[in-house]
Length: 606
Ligand code: M6R
Image 1: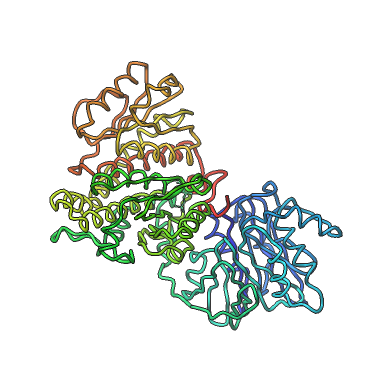
Image 2: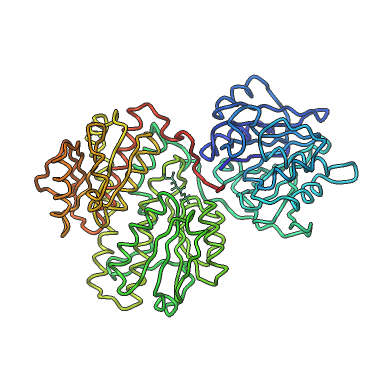
């Protein structure tokens, strides 16, 4: 949440700052700002309420040759979205951008009695604190260091000073920061996407580290001011991956590119001929894998629902395995007990979600092995887990998560296959999963290439409703919840996902003409039971839209039939239809589908 950029060197700073903020805008988009320092150590501060494009319009009116600057795109925590509360914050000679929350800002504020605060933010308190410690005998880095020792909370910060406009001081604890290493140019960014096209060399800051960044180099330190050596890594992502490539929205692009992103998830990990799945990187021996008796799956939002669907597959695949799937935001404060021989699967697209990270750290502290299923390469969770896999879905820019879900479910399934194999499961049973996984990308391809128009037409029919109920049984229950989440977050239609069998225990009371229902059905052993639920809804005047792989007669207002031979993994195909449905509903309602209101892509605060 919140995007930070910065650069120092020989080139004009504004270019990178604005471009970087556009790329990081998915992290928050209620206000944005930049400050650059130029001739005569004069600072030029520009801030605007709203999206980066508003800031850019201001910046375009003020040509600048300044070669040092920092910038920020905000997702408000303390203080409403406004120009006044936008970063950078000025305090005396310094300017600061901050991502995170200063929890003890009220106490610090009372101690800074003589400072006149202008904003409602916790971040300004940190700026004022650094400024109060920044006298003629102290360097900017030392003042930042002293101030951070007094702070409780999370931060990724970048600070510059008009007294020494050759360096940017950055520090991190709980909020990501990357330093891009260019030719006589050093860049700062909250994530690697901002750096693409500027440099492919990056230093990933760890928690408890700070750095002094100059055009000609970077000095890395720990919080006791001891030097640390810099590990420069190569960023693999290319420019194409972060562009819309002709699609109207990133969301549509990300839904439609699932055949290829899923192929990357599966590549080199399943072998249909030998009927094997093998995830390199688990860092567990066959013996350790064999001993696993319990799996706890942790995630938030869509990653949580991917975990819930994964549960059904793991249960079917691995005899005797017990599994819990938990929402990280709840689990982190529970007095949970994990049995012996547990492994934790930590699921996250961004690899930065604060609640998921907190669970990971607590579970590790208890000596339980943690495995990541992560998309963002080099992210904090990916760096802190004991082992795991990248899903290789490529940058997911639209705030609503789509392609990550598909790849996460595939990765959990491969983990299950590997576990089943090592525990001596029946090859025939396991190979069904491998065969379906191998076919899945082509099956998704059929939907995204042939069914879009049909789905759009149905979406238009339901776009004016304000309430929706999604329901499905078994593997389709988590899919129903994911479908409802997708719809609500981009269309703002109130939508809930239920286990089909639960409808008659309460939710069915809701059904009237203000609701439509999305019924998910698979032609399997539970089909007739699902059909009964559907009939119960029909009998109460429901407005049902069915998504199914069945060819059988089903009474409903609208139906999309997925033409597939897949059975076990058909729920993933049903989900792709739901993704497109939510997308077209949001478009029909004229919403900002890539950056829905009140949200941010990477939830790095509680
Ligand atoms: O980056 P993560 O996968 O850890 O993010 C988890 C959730 O914040 C995320 O899935 C969120 O629910 C999305 N907006 C859903 O589309």
